[in-house]
Image (cartoon, rainbow, N blue to C red; front, top):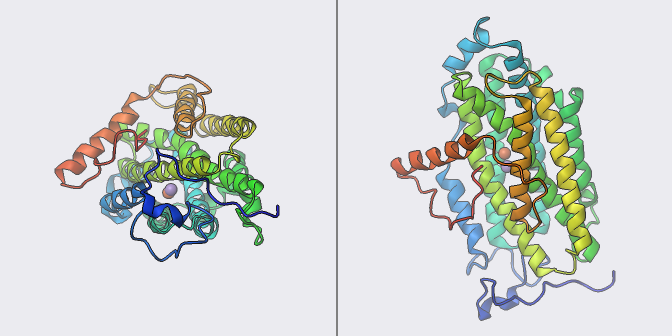
Length: 354
Ligand code: FE
Ligand code: MN
């Protein structure tokens, strides 16, 4: 493609003031100094940054004492529960660093808007905290790192998820890749949707539901709390990612054709299938009062929310089998309120809490 793409002129609905129109968009921002963060163009990026800061935590704040006792005891955890815990630690231990690499090596390069980059730095830090969380879990529980950190190759249901996301993003790791053509923008959207919508928005959620279901039964409550902290961070990552995707879609309407939308819906359906296979593989016998069919239904419910968030129609219409997952996040917000942390100032609908 010979011509260089520039974002479409801002619409009345966007947050621009007339004086800022010249600065360009979220990508292909060749006219702006990436170090000049003020005045802000995308206020939401700043709000997500502040939201991340107010959620600050580190894994050492969570006591693992009870988890260690339960893990070492022969009478607390069933074989099914042990399998589920190991599978989830195995998946997340490497998924977090895959996500971190994508932010630093791909997304940061092409999202040239300074306040979005500021949020990406925050997100990269949070991914480092998440990676560290699984090191902490391995250390405290005395797990075999060789077993946990090779599951992305040895466990097919984990390998399939990782390979799927990596496959969606391969083209943008080409050093000559640029977003200056419609094809380039579509490839970049594939990357953003692969990581923000499918990896962080769908592939993390059967695991979150499993570990939080276990915690509700009083099992591995420390690991459960770590997962809850991660889920709170991830809900902001997901919201930021969807805003970036929707902004690019708005700025380059010619990239997001009806056919492209259908391709994305098909990718999400494929992702849902992988996540459901993962749920059945991790929890073949179910947990007390919960079976893998419900985990699979939860994945469909979550996927519909993600699709709507990026302006695509629902695919499933499945009701939420776990209303307590949303309550978990609501309680968290209340807890933060009493700790005088501010997590609730986002406008309604800005965050996907479950
Ligand atoms: Fe993470
Ligand atoms: Mn994340």
